[in-house]
Image (cartoon, rainbow, N blue to C red; front, side):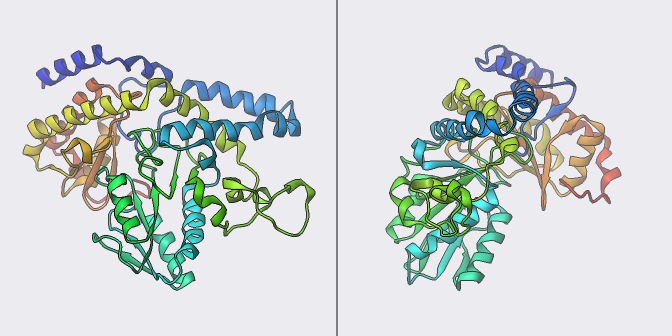
Length: 405
């Protein structure tokens, strides 16, 4: 273990991104936070930014801030996000939640493929996505197919997670999009576990549609606004199924008829959620400053290191590796399986000052967030997991069933 700790210190000393850790509020240096793949840490810049938004823009400038600050905010965010996801500025919209955006895009896409009655997903997709697709299928008379096989002549839409939430497996977006297109289907990608963690090239993959959240690797905070992507040539063909005043042309003439705005803005519905949008900018700026390729290189180095630690220190305690070893198939968290995973997770949080997360049935997810995770933290966390197993401290939590994991 000492050798692993020494190796970690050497890697940290040579890490060109190590100074970004100072950009985050870390009040307890003993606490090892490995759940940035679920909720990112708080950037220090966000504290000052939100004070400005609340005290000055809302408190002093009042409604004048719509024109002076708040409407320009969404345009600015969309331009920055476009660079991270490999899209054009006019192909990205910041609004609503990931679930609402998925609903809007999936329901809008189906009429473009008349005569096809299937929506295709797989068992690794995020459950909420499947719930939404299932509801849409019931509403429209389509059939939701959950399978590993590719699209067929009956498939209207293929909807998948770019990175699967349990194992952290990274899908080949270009190859899978091409396969769907050959079958005549549209694609809708959920980028929630990939944006800010791996390079994304939506235009390069010729992806049709995408959604994603901002509170994981983009560190925008709980409940932060999500985003959607529509390839430029599809925008005028799609109709927003939740028509609201902000998606209407000339919204402020308050007419009772509805004519959609041109381009992607037709997929706006209600007023922008400014207090949920504003925190996005700090996290996005940090990603752009660090460079997504640099973050990807460190992420692979950290997950390689963590997998080595699993093999030498944790596998003897019955932990299995549920994450692919191949770089091209791995994102930025390592999932370890164990029959007592939930109890181990609770023991780590309550007794070892390590915060991972648990995903049923047996996954402990260890998130590597290159902006703030250190190699030494990974080495120490592994030591603490091994200690939990040696002392059998997890047995105190075998009957616990927390509401949130």
